[in-house]
Length: 309
Length: 253
Image (cartoon, rainbow over all chains, first blue to last red; front, top):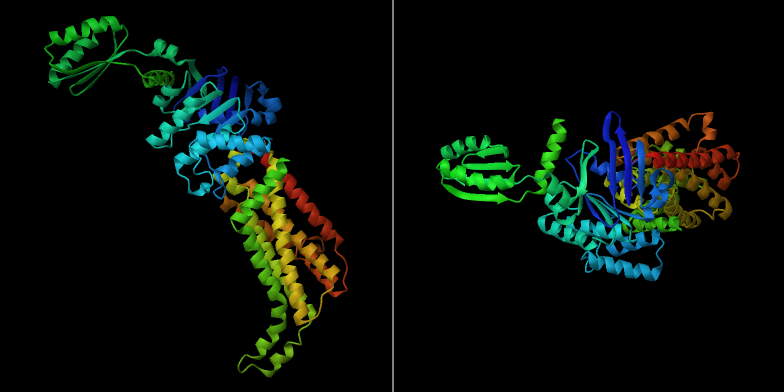
C-alpha cells in the first residue's frame, strides 16, 4: 500500500531523511517509531503532499507521488500531531465542507458526517463552535476529518502524544476500531501505544529505517529477557551482581542500590542458575521477577546500537 | 466546484469573524461623513472664538466638488488601510496556525485556496464600498445636489480597483512569509512604495493612486483619462496573484 524507496530529504546541510526504504502492506496498522528528529514527521508530511522529497520514489495506494501526487488527496487521510481548525466553524460544518471538497453528494454527506461524529464521540458537540473545544476533542475531530472520504491510507502523526491519559485511551480505541478498515501508518514515540495498536513496527533513526517487521517477530528476534531482583542488603546484592556478571548468559547488568537488573541471552539457563547463585551468595530476596521484554527495550537496544555505529 | 466551496468558506469566515461588518462600518461612516464634513467644516472654523476675520475668507462656500474630494480623500486613506489589515494575515496566519496544512491535504489546489481568498476580499470591499457610495450620494443630495449616477459609479469602480491592487499585493506579501507579523511589515513596506513612489511626477500617471483623481474628474468634469494607470493596476493585480500562486505552489506548508 505504501512503498518508499531510497527517500532523501535535505534541509540545507541537514539530512532529515537519508535513503529511507519502507514497505507498508495493505490492511496493517504500521507503528512508525523513532527518536525525536529521526524523520518520522518529515516522512508523513511527504506522504501527505505537504513537503517534497529531495530524491527517491514514493508510491501510495498505487499512486506515484512524483508524477500523480495531486490525485493522492482522495486516497489518503492525514492527521497532524496537533490538528487545528477554524474556530468559527462547528464540527458538522467542517466535516460537511471536507465532504463537499471530496465530491460526496448531499445525502451521503449528511449520513457520513453523522456517522463520523458518533464514531469520535462528538455527536453532542456537533453544533458547537470548534473554538471552545478541548485538546482531546480537537484530536478526535481531526481523526474524523481524516476519515471523511473513507481513505485507503490513514497517516497519523503522533496522534496521542499531546493528550492526557483519558484522551489517549479514547483515540487509541478509535485507531483499534479502524484496524482492518484501512491501512494505517502511525508515528509515535510512546512505545506502549504502538505496542497496543500496531501489528507491524518500523524503527527509524537518523533518516534511515533500522528495522521493519511484524511486532511479534521483532520481539522474538530482538527482545532479550530481563530478570529483576531486590535484596535486603545492598552490599550482599553488589557481591551477587559481581558473580552474575561473570556468567556467559548475562548480557547486561545494572545495579541500583539493592536492586539488580539482569538482561540475559539464554533464559533457560538464567532461570536455573540465577536463583542458585543468589542462595550461594546469601542474598535475602524481597522481590524476584522475570519481566516480559517490552517494545521499549527493543527500541532502545536498536536505536542505541545505531547511534554507537 | 471546489473554488465555490472555498469561496463559501472564506465568506462565512468574514461574516462570522465580523470582518465584513468592520469594513462596511468604516467605509459607510466615512462615506456618510464626507459630504457632511465638506459642508460643516467652514462653519465650524468660523465658530472658533477670536478667529481672525481673514480666516472666514479662506473658506469659500462649500460646493459639491468639496464633498467629492473629501469622499475620495477619506476612501483613499481608510480603504487602503483596510485592504492591508484585512489581507495581511489571510495566508500567513493560516500557515502559522496550521489550518492551511489541514485543508491542503484534501482536494484543494493552492491556486483555488488563494483565488478564493482574493475573490472573497474583493466581494467584501465591493459590497462595503457600494453601501458607502450610496450613503455618500444620498447625503450629497441632501446637503448639496445630486451627483451624476454614471460617473459616480465609475469613480467607485476605480476606487475598488485601487483597493484590489493593495489586496492583491498584501496577499502576495502574506504568501511570501510564514507569520502574520512579518506579513504586516512587508505589506506596509509595499504600501509605502506603491503610494510613495506613485505620488512622484511624472511617474504618478502610471500608478494606481492616479485612478482616484481620474474618478474625481469623471464626476466633476474635466481632466484627462488615466488608462495607463488603469491597465497597470489590473496588471499589478494579475502579477501579484500569479507570483503568490507560484511561490505558494513551491512552498512546503
